[in-house]
Length: 434
Ligand code: CMC
Image (tube, rainbow, N blue to C red; front, side):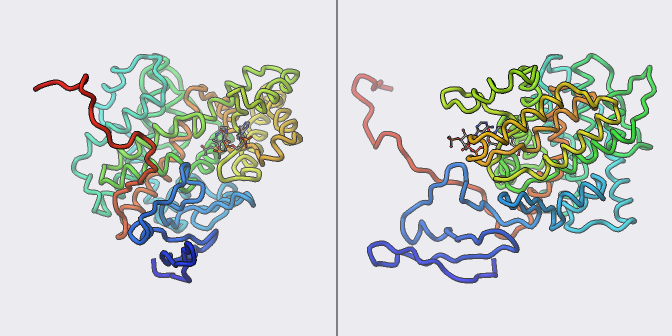
């Protein structure tokens, strides 16, 4: 980093222990560079959960959690969701600028030409039970992609990194649709090069060899927007997992597979599935107060799924957009009276008037409404998090590539505050003679 602005002195008992450089970013808080702290003082910093730690520098995404702002490469999420298509946003996230028509066409063509998976990959599915969770299959099959592309796995080559990005963005939807077909016992559908990215995904999901499938443009638009809203979210748990895995030199398919595993957790991407299950469990508006009471009870592990965020202490801007997408989709499908949507609106209204949620700044997050839209689009609940992964793949791979191309990058190796036993000897009763 070259933009050194000033230093912070660490003083103990009137003695300066060390001087730590402060760096400003384009937006957001300055950071204190503590890299020299251990060598100068013998001290570590302690920040489990990384509430106050910038783990890297990045030029991809910016979030102002207090103001409810989300920017991809500087562009507000609202404008991207309104005016751009998902593949344009992918290009933006990967390359830093919105593409002109020619590069965009070339990019889209390149993605289209890589949507098919190697025929041998289909065999992997047979190793899974039909009722396996799609995220379990996705972790395995995406990781297995690394076995198919030995010729383009040199992580130091920009061309190979770009190829991996294209392959992952192109193939993850095919694999997600295959997960669905496998679980329902239906034949896999090959991608169709005549279709756009989202249409093609819906085709692979819903078409069968016996049935023609024509995607509804309003629904295609809605899914395209959902993917834009999920495309990146700076150093969240799964992206940090991808970065940490990649810091050792691991290949991009293995790293993205690790990201998918992390995303599956209910506190992260798994929340969209949990929201729908929660709404089904609540079942009726009259039962909402009981569930709100459970969410507030410290002795009850139940949390209001789709509420709260580590960074947003304001309405998640993605949730606002998702809410309006929800209206559009339900209107298009003539489902204005959708039971789950009515329940979600009422749950949101009650929670936002409750002192517990107000005091803790707990607002709906992106997952609160996404499940209802995906449900309306005919996506099975168990597949929701896999669709989150489909949108987030571009973010994961962009962060991985940004890290690998940073000349300052080193293997990630956090330290710890050790709280186990001090050194001790194996007792006589446990000693064996070898
Ligand atoms: N319902 C009830 N109470 C909550 C909730 C919730 N959903 N979220 C946080 N709280 C309470 C929590 O109990 C704590 O209360 P207290 O101060 O009395 O101990 C306080 O709010 C702060 O919570 P925290 O757990 O310290 O906050 P965190 O930043 O560690 O956790 C979170 C963030 C998203 C994991 C959490 O809000 C949560 O579990 N939400 C539900 C799951 C969810 O919707 N996840 C999707 C996140 S958005 C999509 C994504 O990026 O993956």
